[in-house]
Amino acid sequence: MNLSDIQLWDIIAETNFYANTVTKTVPVMTVQYVGAEASGTVIVTVTTGDVTFQHGDLASEAVDGTINSDDDPGVIDVSDAAANTMGGVVDLINGSDNWRAILHGCRRSDASAGLLFTLSEKQAKVAAGIELAADETVGEWKIGRSITNRKFNTVAGSDGLGDLTDVNHQNSLDFWRFEATFTNTSATYIYDMHDISEDATTEKLIATLEGGATTVAAEYAFTVDQGRAIQVPIGHRIFVQVDNSHAMAITELVIHGHTAKRFA
Image (cartoon, rainbow, N blue to C red; front, side, top):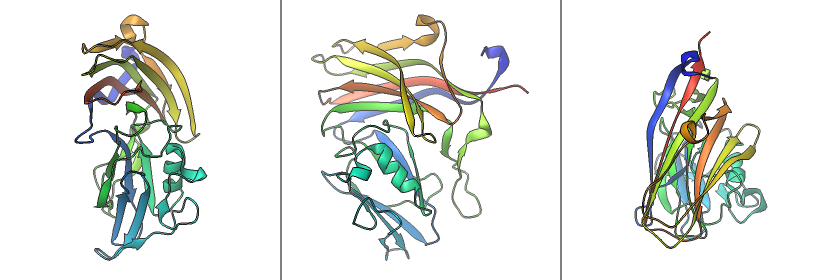
């Protein structure tokens, strides 16, 4: 697909993504309450990453039994077989009529145990949903970011909530460049690019690059080094993940891409 053939719609010129072991600023998943109750709240338990879902009158919420990973209504226990991956977690949430969620900072196959950072009770009945962040200090250290056109619209409808949509039904997602900067010189980094379909619950590794130990920003431009952008169908997401076994102090990952729509 050439630039002369497309209309740029949802341009992601610079999607800045930071990991910081103090501030925990790596969003993994967006969650929204869409049920009939006045309030819907989310809690992430310290150390385990278990997630509790509550709804009801404001300030009087009780657990929502429409979500249950095994035998504890209202709770996704990440040690349960149905919830030991992030794909399992998001599917359990979306299996309830009261909740919906999108993954954007991890793969479906990533282990869920200890992945989410502690979250005190937070209101999730808001137009754009709330973000759950990663705890980079637990287990294998990773940071990732998706290019996707699937998101909660921030313009609320009559119910006060934004819709979860594939914005304007574009024909493809294009990813042309990423940059990564680290503050540690003792480890080697693997950059993995995945084509992920949440609808089909599939993910495919489409490119892998290896980076050395350095504090100099790594940059890879697919349009230059491969002659073309990486492209996946609509409804998918392109996920870029930096994978490293050493916990880092501060890391920045910047990806560049856009969603595109062919002219009729």
